[in-house]
Amino acid sequence: MKKRVIIIGAGLGGLSAAIRLAAHGFAVTVLEQQPQAGGKLQRIVEQGYRFDRGPSTITLPHMFAEVFTSAGRRMEDYVTLSPLDPSVRNVFHDGSIVDLHRSVEAVALQIAAYSPEDAAAYPRFCEEAERLYRISEEQFLGKLMLGWRDMARPRMAAAFARIRPFTTLQQLLRHYFRHPNTLAMLGRYATYVGSSPYEAPAIFAMLAHVERELGVYSVKGGTSSIVDAFERLAGELGVELHYRTTVERIRVSGGRVAGVETTAGSMDADIVIAGGDVLTICERLLRPEDRRSMPDARIRGYEPSLSGFVMLLGIPASQPQLLHHTVFFPARYEDEFQSIFRELQPPQASTVYICHPAATEPEAAPPGGSSLFVLVNAPYLSERWSWEEESERYAARIAADLTRLGVAGVPQAEVRRIYTPQQLHADTAAYRGAIYGISSNGARQTFFRPANRSRDIEGLWFVGGTTHPGGGTPIVTRSGQLVAERLISIYS
Image 1 (cartoon, rainbow, N blue to C red):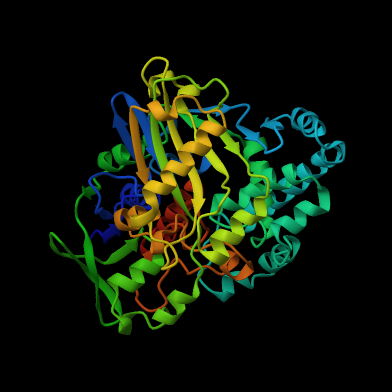
Image 2: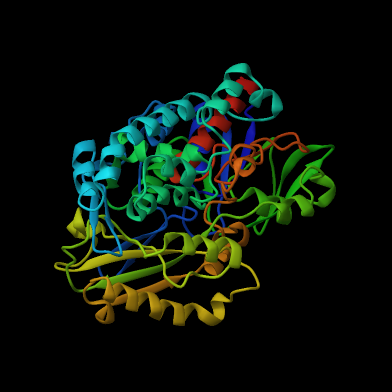
C-alpha cells in the first residue's frame, strides 16, 4: 500500500519533497493556504509590469536540477536559467562602483580604484571562500543532521574545526581587507541567510565563491518560473495540490502523526512534512503535550532572521545605470545591523537592493519601462515598531532615497505596491515575519538548527529555511530533497 504523505506548504522545499516522493511511488498531497504555489516567492503582474515578490538572486542551479533528475526529467525542459556576468553591481556611498565578475582580475581591478591593498588580497580571499564552500558541500549541505550522532562523526567533527565556527564573517574579512567598501560588499553575504556579518560565522564567506565561480542566474519569465516548473512536474507525477486550504492542526495519536485538520476538513496521513516555518508549525499546529522538545520557551529562545520591506515599482522609464541586480550601500554598514537586531527598528540609512529584470529580459516591463523590486532589510516583528502605522511614511522615505540614488521616474510610477514584514507573516506564517526562519547569528543557530525530523512525533518531518541545511532558495530546495531521500530509504 502506498504511504500517504501530506505536505504543508507549496513553497520550493515542500514541492521539492513532493516531486521526489511521488516519483518513488508515494501518494502525495500538498496543502497551501495561499491562492497559488511559491510560498514567499509570488509572481505579480500589473499593467504589463512583471515582478517576483520574493527571492530574486538565483545561485547553485544544480540544486534545482536535482529535483528534476530525481524524477527522471531534465530541468532544461521545464525552465530556462541564464548566467549573469557581471552578476551584481555594488554602488558605495563614496561613489565607487564594483561590478562582480567571474574574473578575479576584473573585480580586483575595480577594488584597486579605492584600495590597492584590498585588491591585492582579493585573490587570496577567493581561495579561502572556495575552501569553505568545498567543506560545506561535502559535509553539511548534502547530509541530514538528525541528532548528535550525525554531528559527532569523525569527518564531520574535523570539518567543523576547519571552518572556524566561532570566527565571525566580519573577523574573517578583516583578515584580508581594510576598506569599508570591500567589507560591506563581502559582508552582505550574511544577509543571504537573514543574518548580520558581525555575528554570523565565517562559513558564509563561501557565498562569494558561489556567486563568482558557480554563477548568478536569471530565470526566463522571472524567478517564479522555477515554482511553475516544480508545480507542473508535481502535477505530472500525480501530486494532489490544494490551494486556499489552511492547516489548523496536525493530528497525533499514540506518539505518531495521524493526519491534519484543515479548513476543508480532516485528512489522514502516514507522514506529514511541514514546509512552513518550524517555529510557527510547532506553536500553532501542535498541542504542547505533543511537542515536549519544543516548548514555548525554546521557541522564544531562537532569534528570528531579519525581515524585509519591499516596494514594487512599475516605472515608465528605463534605468541604464542598473544591472539585473544592483546594491546601494550606506556610509556606515554596521549601523544597519545594530538597528535591526539590537534596537528592532528599521535603520536610518539602509542598504537598498534593486532587482531590475528588464535589464536582461525586456518583456518584464512595457517598452522603455522598468519593473523594479526594491528590498531593504528590516527587523522581525516586535512591539518596538508598527508597520500598520509606519508603512506609508517609510515607503515615502525609501522612494526619496531611490530618487537620490539616481533611479528615474519614481514619482511617476504606474504601479506601486508595498509589502511589509507584517504582510509576510500573514501570508506565509513566517515566524515573526522573518524571511529566513531563524537567523544564523552565532554558531548555535547556524549549525544546530531545529532538526528535520520531529523528536516527539513519529512521521512528522520539516523542510525549509528554519531547519537544516538553512535559508536561501537553493538550500531550501535541497532540504526537500534530503528529507524525501531519507523517507524513501526508510520505506523502500
